[in-house]
Image (cartoon, rainbow, N blue to C red; front, side, top):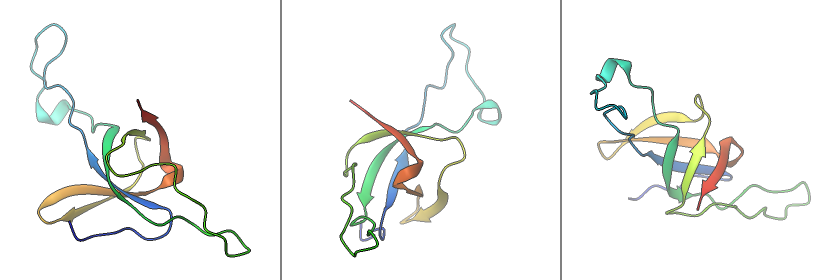
Length: 95
């Protein structure tokens, strides 16, 4: 992919959840919630402090992350639905 976010932004691909419940019922598309888990596709170089020093990013490409329900901006890039969000919108990295 030929896209690199700027500053402290992160490009994320949502990881789709299960399509059935624990009891085996199939969940229709209209009843599904958007997943709050994703994989980092690419990251920016990091923000800058007031003195101009770069703040390093805590996440890297390939990390599985959790993010808030309404986090990020949905975009379509190369026919794929992705999210762009600030690093501060990420709640944590899944080990």
